[in-house]
Length: 315
Image (cartoon, rainbow, N blue to C red; front, side, top):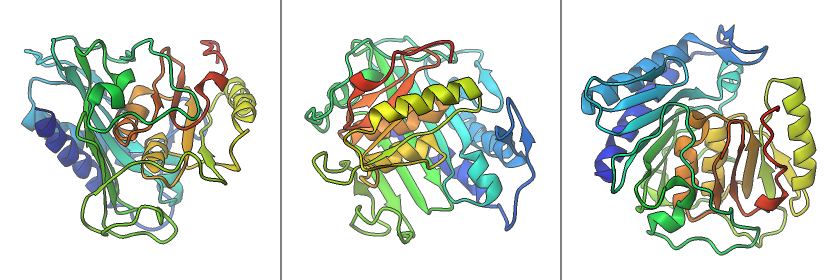
């Protein structure tokens, strides 16, 4: 079933990415949503509809939660729910910066029918691994993605992220590892991946003992939250040589999974931002922390999760 779900996720992400690939040269017209810089474009909306059409055709009884059109429930629910971000990295997309993508993931029953309500964060209360922890054993979905599972009854089952301007597709099914297809081998992007430019490459993350580590992060639109995030970043920097701000949480997680970046931590992301990317990073054998509250921390890679400030609903 997970591989069938993965096939749908990949097809849906490719459909969304095909809409984004229609982008021409120059700046794209955009409207603001919650704040200045929080943009939405016609491409966001059309890409989400393309993703929804694929899922609805293949899985008509599944629920869907999308960034632009919210949550929809079928008349006869299957117990599976899709979380989609049609355009993660809209600000990059508007300005012609290549780091943007379509992200699609599915949550559903493993041994039981439970499925979270729209907007819920399906995590356990497991303690996040500390810096230097041994990577989980490959192929073991509960070990590799412990935060995604609830006593083995339900979890994130499959996810795909398609970045058309980069020519890359990342995907994973729980227990089957994380994979990358890179059709272009963009200069300066992922030189550490190796392997064929078109054949699927299994991902294993980077070397936790490597010098010159890079930490990826992101910032919100609210001034108070941004101040909180900057303060938290200062506490995370020991052990890292520098920081990178890619502008897409989904791709941040993928770049940690393929070893381009060493770790990622961000406060205040939404489920559709991390759903697919967190599964991909976990299936690459990396420690992963999903938000336990909303807002909360999303993190992946070898960093000290205990150094993350307490999650505060006021930020």
